[in-house]
Length: 289
Length: 197
Image (cartoon, rainbow over all chains, first blue to last red; front, side, top):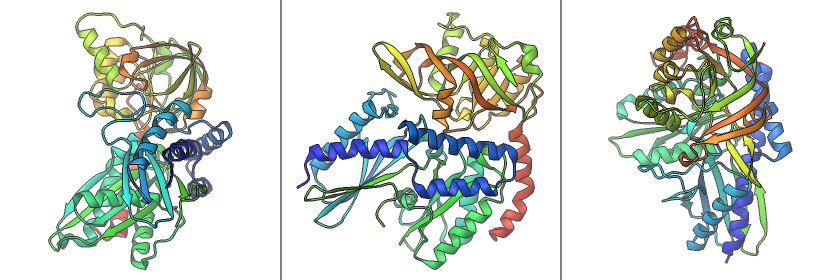
C-alpha cells in the first residue's frame, strides 16, 4: 500500500522535474538540429532555445511560462488514494515550483488558481503489476495542443490518407505550436482512442525505435517529409520543423480508419517515477521502457 | 538595434522585416481576455487603467510570484499571437500601440492595421521564458488580476529585451509571408516524397 502522502510528495517532485528539465533525448535532438540548420534566423531560434533550457535547469525555473495542464499516466496499483495524492501534489506544485495556474472551467472560464478542477488533473490508467506504480506526467501547453486534430478516414484512403492528414495538420499548424515540434500519431481504435494514442505516442523517447519495422519506416518517412516543408523553428523558416514523429496503433472497426494527430512543442516536457510497494522511489525523465 | 518606449511612428516605420532589435523601457502584457475587456471599455467610452499610446504590447501570460507584497517575474515567454487576430486590428486603431511582441505572426487584417497606423510585429522565441524574464528588470504593476494570472495586464520594465526579430514591418512585408511562399514552392516535392499526389 503506497500512502497518499508519498504520492503527494512524488507528484510535486515530478511536476518540478518536468517543468524545469527537458528530457535528454529532446536536448540531443535540438543540438543536432542546430548543427544541421543553415538559416541564420533559424539558428538564432535554436540557440535561444538551448540557452533557455540550460538557464531553466541551472536556476530551477520552469523553461516555459506555459507549464501546461497536468496530464498523468498511471500504470499499476491504483485506487482513490492515488488520485487524491496526485490532486494534492498538483495543487502544491502550482504554488511551490511555481506552475502557472492554467486550469479553468470550460464555460465560465473561472480559474481556481491551483490547476485543479473537474477531471483536472486528467489521469489515464493502465494495468501494471502488483509491486509498483509508474506515474508519468506530460504537462501539455495550449499552443501545441490547439493544433491537434482528428480525421475519420475512409478505410479505402489507407496509408496514403494517413500521410496526407499528418502533413495537412502540420502545415495548418505552421509556426503556432512552437516548432521544432514532435508529432504524435494515433492510427486506429475509435475517434477517442486515436486521439488518446496520439498523446501516448509523445511519451516515448525520440531515440527509442518503434518495434514494428513498417511503422518505424513510416515515422522516418514522415519526419523527412515534414523537414522538407520549410516551416522551421518558430515558423520563421528553416529545415528543422519536427524533431520526431511517433506512432501508436490499435485495431479498429472494419469500416473505420481514425487518425489522431497530437502536436507537441519543442519544450516536450515529461517526467516519470516508479514507486515500489516497499516505498522505494526511482525518477526518470525518459520513462521506463 | 535598440529601441526605447514610448515608440515614435518614425522609429517604428524605419524597421524592416528580418531586422533584429532589443527593447528598453516599458512593455504591457495582453492576451485574449484583456483584448476583449479593453475593447468593450473603449466602446463604452471608458478609459483604460494604462496608457498604450506608443506602447509595446506583449502577447504573454507570465508566471509571477508575490513575496512580501512584491511581484517577482518567474517566466515570461510569448503566447500564440494568432488567437488575437480577430481583435487586434481594432485594438491597434483604438489604442495607438506601436509594437506587438509575440510568436507565430498575425493575419492580413492585422497587417493592414499595422501598415495604416504604424505598428510592427516583433517575434520572440516561443517557450524561451527564462531568457525573456531575464530582460525584465522589474514588475512595475498589475491590472485586471480578476482575469487570472495569465490573462491579467502586467507592466514590465525591460532592458535589452530580446533578441526580437521584426516579423512584420509597416510596409506589410512579413517573414511569415516569405516562409509561406517557400512552403508553397516546397510542397509539390514534399507531396511526391510522401506519394500523396
